[in-house]
Image (tube, rainbow over the protein chains, first blue to last red):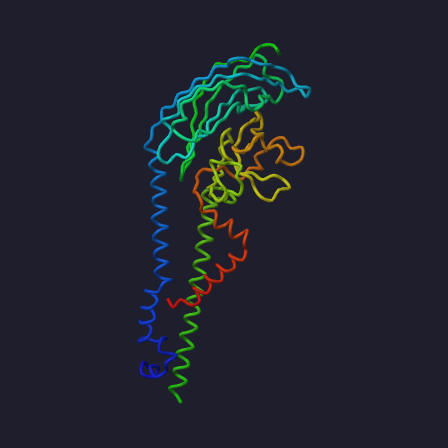
Length: 193
Length: 180
């Protein structure tokens, strides 16, 4: 069979003597090499990203936070029946230990958390910030609440609440981390003002 | 004359075999992609386990073209989480952070308010007219992981469809012409 087809130029590639040649040509063609290089590069890159993300697990952060309610600016019932309060806060925190070499930024926010007879959990973000680098991770800030502190209903008079500092670590690549410090024992005034 | 017919037959059978092999290998590529996608859907419990960030509203955390991995679990939604949600009357889902949560005592239903880290105000302007809160059914998943830049491929392909057709054509040609 080989001899039969060897006579025909067109078919020479199709059968055994020519087949190895064409395969040989294929293996060293530009496309084949580019494909192999690309596959290899992407595999290595994916592996490095996964490893960078895994190294975050070795970091055991010890952040600290301290919050003081400096002043209740005003406290009233809206016409629609919901309580709203405006307050001034002193926030100090040291989040430097959260930063590793795979950290792009840390998103930090302070939330008021409380329970009412209607809602088993209310979380209201009062202030947030983006920390771009370790140098900015130790801060002190004096601010009034950035987002409105409005209850669903009229339950805020004399309400005991927690202030919780949450942080979300955004990596350069890989898994995102989050944790918090709960600071209990804050109480709102008994009367509107 | 017998040997000509024989050789024609052998060529025919070879070509059919080759075409079949190529069709099978093409099918394998398509089905394995489908398998991976469906497996991800099962593992993450989210309808679309991987999304591409299209806007800059979460910068500098997420830029346009980044890829997010979503996870949809039974865990309650809490403030600070980055969720992907659908708003009635909007086609494209939005990736923003939860800033307020109110969870009902009796039913466990949640009212959620979101905001983009890079936006000045909260998302009530983006919600449907008169909608104040997102409920559980609006939320498609929460972002758990992040891969930069990879989503640009998708963005380029959806915005310049010609490139998509060229790429598909080239890939198809490669599959058809490759001998093994």
